[in-house]
Image (cartoon, rainbow, N blue to C red):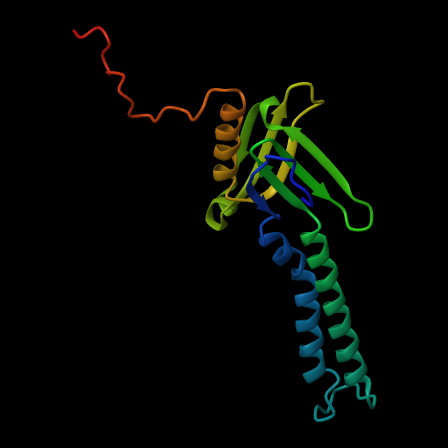
Length: 182
């Protein structure tokens, strides 16, 4: 988020979880490993049954290395181009590299905030947050958000503050378990 509104305070600013980058790098890693194995077996000049073409090993290795590096750069730029921001007044979802899209949800309009985590998400600490806002055409989805429970809780706290409710009472409040006293 480039600018905060007057009197606005940043609560959380995050990108999708790093696991999205790792998942996108599986194919280039497999390709580099396959070329390295082929380089030492099929294209080796020391192997009798090999296909040896002078300098083919060098060009193949450099080409695959450059492709893998380019893939890494593209994946990293794509990962950094998605930003989830929560302030005390609004939730902002920014996406895009060349053309930028920004979705703003006022915190006081949030009606429901749901989190979903798979078993892998629970292990690595990421999940999906769905935010329902009044007047919206459906839930806004924040995929692969790090610590989705913390984000959800902060949305709830900020929403209550904006609506004038202050912070929610702790679960062990002064209210007796048996109000009738019997």
